[in-house]
Image 1 (spheres, rainbow, N blue to C red):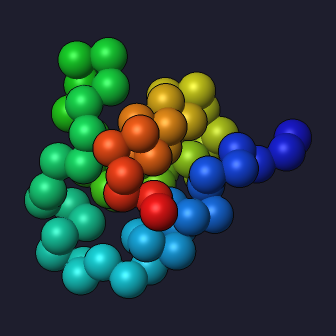
Image 2 (spheres, helix red, strand yellow; image 1 turned 90 degrees about the vertical axis):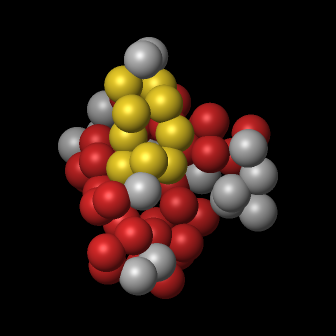
Length: 65
């Protein structure tokens, strides 16, 4: 399965975040579920639609530029 195109940009930003920020800060809310950067990464690792929605939302908010 091909990886979502915005996933690479998310992973690059994720790698540069401080570790404590990855698990404590809410990055976005998808389908009424708050998601931290760690949760988004786990969803992307499992190639779920939930993770792709989160990455799309972060892109629309301008975080993946």
